[in-house]
Amino acid sequence: MKLKSLIFGIIAICFCSCEKFLQIGPPKQSLVQSEIFKTDELATTAITGIYSQMALTGYASGNGGSISVITGLSADDLVGYVTTLNFYENDIPTTNTTITTLWQSPYKSIYSANAVLEGLSSPNGVSEPIKAQLRGEALFVRAFANFCLVNLFGPVPLNLNTDYRIMAVEPRSSVDVIYQQIVKDLREAEGLLPENYVTTERVRPNKSAVQALLARVYLYNEDWANADKYASMVIAKTATYKLVAYDDIFLKNSQEAIWQLVPTAGGNTADGSVMILTATPTFASLRPDFVQNAFEANDKRKAAWVRTYTNTTGTYYYPFKYKVKTSSTISEYSMIFRLAEQYLIRAEARGHLNQLSSAIDDIDQIRSRAGLSLIKNINPSISQSNLLQAIENERRVELFAEWGHRWFDIKRSGKADQILAPIKAKWQSTDQLYPIPSAEITRNKSLVQNKGY
Image (cartoon, rainbow, N blue to C red; front, top):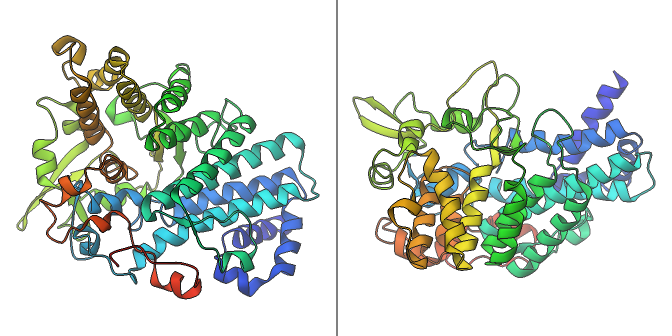
């Protein structure tokens, strides 16, 4: 009972917000931190608690405030309704509660990761192998959360410790500085984490998860050679990662999974809960023009991943990547990184490097599973620009309604205005960055609001 109480206290402290931390104060924080890092077991609980919190609420959970849903509304994946019109219409008040969640939740992950890093750097009773593992995981979490923040909000405060006096006045760092820290954290984590998962599941990041995020980071920064390099590292691990049947991709511990989050006990993924329709939608559904125009004829993904719900109000399309809305038995885990994205990253990188034959091979891996004609057969002499457009199209239909891929893709390609202005009456170019919550600006006078808000 004493151990159980202590673990509960650890998790409570690790996930307190900065505001809550002000109430706790440094002495109590230091005392609890010293208890956490007395043993391997307790220290491990601190890091696994971060994943539990990510799956429970906030930006990563797939609930109403998740990146998958909200950015799908902002882009051209999803249609919004009564509760989500602000995002669908790209007209977001700075007081919007979902924006506050999208800002605060990654910072809670960062704060908790920083607390773990500080605890491991202080005198402690953690064994060296576990210390390396936990440090690697904490660095990875911090990098992942910063990646989400910088792509949602642009320049953001870079928090590297748990000192509330610094956090309270931390100004926004440039996008370049944020990415430099992300790469630094990931490169160190890569050297600390093992090739194999530390449990039988794929829920605690390993070296491949780090490499998958590095590949994405380098792609977004147009470092094509490194994007190719790191995606290739993951793809090469054929004994661990494979492209699987569409109905199996999002199952727990799928062979396509590189990193997943475990849903809360007694339920299934929140993405499934939110996106699968059993009544007239009040939150989100798929855009009809996407369903009707994005897929090539006979694309197996349309049959596997799109469903309709019809009642007296009309017919609605919805994503069916997750097959279970609610269940007492968890069969699916929330997917964060999967192998198909790595093939698409490498294809795009090699396309830009003018390695067209290799890029065609990668995109054809994805097209083959979809039952589509292979580019190497139907258009082996495809131009570089047409191949890059084909890769963009494949990302569109392979990764829709997942982790903001479409929203981030149209922004990094410079096509957001071209794509969204014709279909979004209120669209302005400044809408590509979300507003910083007004309460955060009130709290931290060093913050400056994004343009357009």
